[in-house]
Image (cartoon, rainbow, N blue to C red; front, side, top):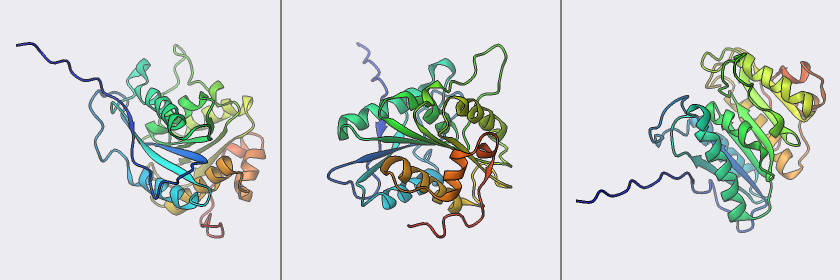
Length: 253
């Protein structure tokens, strides 16, 4: 009996969060966490509560500007070394957004390993901004090339990290942001003091910060004063900006 070929795995976009606009003018692609090494299929629950909360927030905030927000469903659960599967899937997702919606700006928003994927896939010409929340980054190794940053030139970049994160090292995201800032002034990084990897303690502030940044990057809305100051400040000030308790309470919802 002839063996049937195993169908190739493909990445896909989840359905649009909220009501999909008829004429899209901006896209957010949400990149969930993943594992360092795994060829298993991603679990349906891989999109964490933070990813889902971000997606709902963006869809609501960008309704008037005709924003489309989609969660990216990866082929594999793992990054898998030089294969960089999650980054390739993020790049495919940008291409798919362009195919569906045309020449519109795209923001990549990633959490944990998805944060690394967002940063790595930012070189696509449609990408105008990146948000990396508690990004997983590899330990620095003198024998290996550092995580690239040249693809971030010309993009607005926001990194958010809890100072008590025990899963992903906040010092590594600071070092990457510092290298990126040398080539691109539009890089900022906020520290969420005393919060851990899931950013549960200041979830509302993190959501408000991400909304403020993304709506400004995609649609030209005025940025809040803290974000404006963080982008303008030289390192390390703009890369260790504390996220204030209550951030966003006065911002437009």
